[in-house]
Length: 147
Ligand SMILES: CC(C)(COP(=O)(O)OP(=O)(O)OC[C@H]1O[C@@H](n2cnc3c(N)ncnc32)[C@H](O)[C@@H]1OP(=O)(O)O)[C@@H](O)C(=O)NCCC(=O)NCCS
Image 1 (cartoon, rainbow, N blue to C red):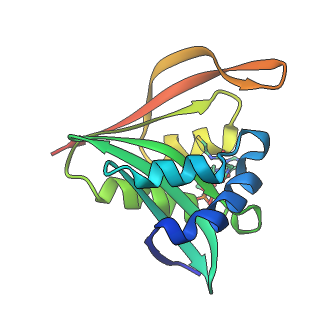
Image 2: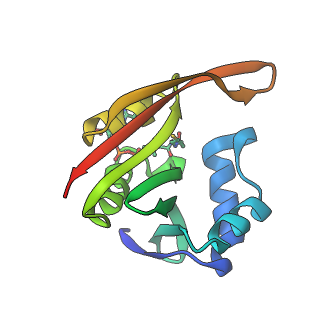
């Protein structure tokens, strides 16, 4: 466990399966993942156990701002530090500017991960995520790199 590499078109199917395990009905489709990875501004990175992908993130970089679009760890591999490792990988890939994301306000695991790695809340989007008949508020977090 722990080997990581950049993701590409060949990873789309496995990535969509892992995304579904992580996000259920809110998961991205293969087409959405493929479309995102095809953008010059978007990078994907995955962590592997043998050949199987167990953790991943997609991030979009514009100038010196990076948005974490999605990040997830296979349920069987959680609470082993992979989430923190991925956040540190993203922060290490940038020297200055800002890394930001939004998260559902009821996602305790993710919010603790971000707060524990130095992110701070800076915005609030009421009813941002739709889950069946529910609308969930989002919180925006950022990490300012000193440069
Ligand atoms: C959020 C997620 C990526 C965390 O991944 P992870 O590999 O389990 O995280 P780590 O093991 O690195 O945990 C780092 C810290 O985050 C916090 N944390 C992680 N999972 C937690 C949980 N279930 N409950 C409370 N705190 C949690 C803890 O502070 C933890 O540190 P500790 O283990 O030393 O106490 C993972 O739970 C996941 O994939 N969730 C589903 C997808 C998702 O919600 N992604 C985020 C969308 S914004």
